[in-house]
Length: 155
Image (cartoon, rainbow, N blue to C red; front, side):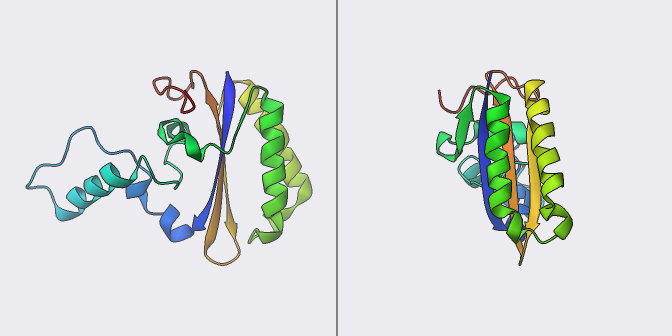
């Protein structure tokens, strides 16, 4: 098992747009389907695999292009340390003072290492000042528990 790290920062409105965060349905909508259903399907088919916007399910990162992987680690502790460095770098921009608390962030990093060691994934999100959002994810690979079918994006 190894762990891939992902990071995305962008407009909260983009993050909230589920059509780019969900994989396309396996069956195309009928020509008589409502316009919004057909539009969502078109967006999902064209944008879902290539967009860097976080997927709705953490394990679905494994279906995204390899270029989106920010780091890969064999040890959960190393992956958690990467997360800790990212959170420390962004903490001054967090919209909430509660989220900036160093003790809280340290606890998140420690619990991340434990969860990864058990084969789980970790996804965290934080509002940043303005209308921005930070999404981080650590995804176990080489058989993900939640989604065992995708192969490793790095081959």
